[in-house]
Image (cartoon, rainbow, N blue to C red; front, side, top):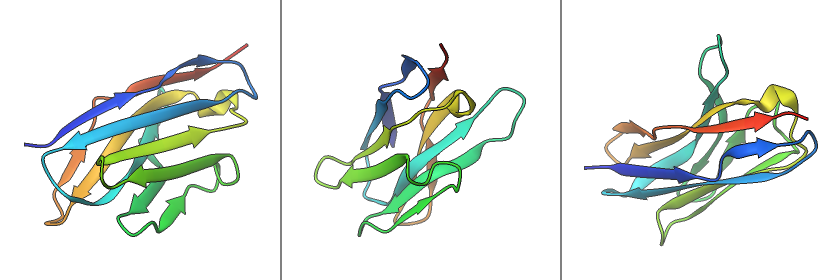
Length: 114
């Protein structure tokens, strides 16, 4: 059974930084990443990373967010810099197993406000 434990969300001022972590257990994951959902909007991709380190970012976060993973710890990170109010959302950890099964974390709130 896959378990995803997210941490690192919170309240930060515009221009600030946060780092999200997601520790996964139960499988080997080909893809790990983060999606987000703002109130009244659809869930959207933020960033994903393959087991080999290939990354893909949403245009809106390129140059500000950095995704990384530690395969030995089965953990994915999202370093978020220069945060903007429009980054406010619930951030969900995402994993895809080698057999293509998808799993989602419970979500962690990120609020960017002065």
